[in-house]
Amino acid sequence: MEENGHDVVSDNYIRYTDKLVKQEGKWLIKEREQHFVITKKQDL
Image: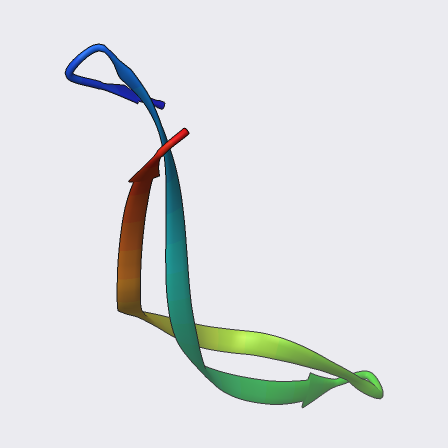
C-alpha cells in the first residue's frame, strides 16, 4: 500500500464472533460479526 508517496504496511487485528450450526454432522458458520480491535500502519 502507498500513502503520501511512501510504502506503508497495514496490520489489522480482528475479533470474530460466530454463530454456528451443525448440518449433516458438520459445523458451519451461520453468522459472523467482525470487530476491528487494532489497525496499525507503519512505513516500510
